Image (tube, rainbow, N blue to C red):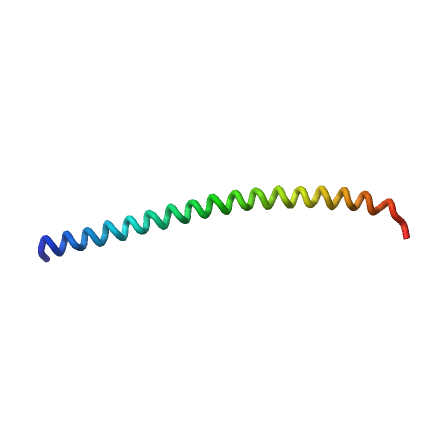
Length: 64
């Protein structure tokens, strides 16, 4: 194997490593974003539970 072949292979490895690092960073950002979304969804669920309980209390006053 010649030096320029080694150099070319190293260049390809560098590009591949950079691509992998960029994709891993993107995945980490998506995971963080998903974590925030889950937190907001949990808050929304708690709010809906509170509203449901309040509505149940209001409706229970009515009798058919």
